[in-house]
Amino acid sequence: MTKVPQNDEELWRNILAGDSKAFTAFYDRYWLQMYKAALHYLKDAAAGEDVVQEIFITIWSKRQTLEIKNFAAYLNSATRYEVYRRLKVAKQSILEFHEEVITKSSVVYNEGYQKLNETDNSNIIDQCLKDLPKRSREIFYMSKVNQLTNTEIAEQLGITKHTVENQLARALKHFKLNLSRLTIIIYCLTSFFK
Image (cartoon, rainbow, N blue to C red; front, side, top):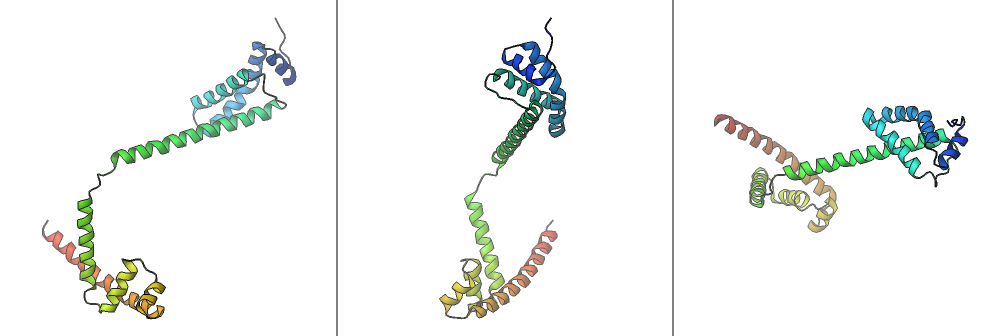
């Protein structure tokens, strides 16, 4: 019966020579602290055990190329790295799952329905703004529909930026007032026909 070395350096020399008993002693010496660290982050006993097993399998299979000077520090780093890698993989899997669910449950796109909605919305805007002076209506459309800046509008119409801002403020106030009235009318009509 061979005696198990007491210090890590002797243990590692024997592991490098292929001594499985030395490796078992090495495992017995460090597995619990590694398991506790993995369990702390993963909150899963089986996953914690898997982390420890994976690290020791890697150490045994790569023992000839590894240069370990401080075993506690090396195993601590290896445990943190493996936990991080697993959390990253799990997060990626969750994101892919959510993407797949969203893709499968997406509503079929209906261009005709969207076109009708756009037409309806345009008609509602036209109705709300019909009482405005022509210039205010024109500035509103240039700003909100054509997405022009106040400076661009002022340059195109040959007016000051301040005038554009005033006209937009007036148009928006009028729009909000009429839209709120329209909303009340629609609510009353839908309540009436229920």
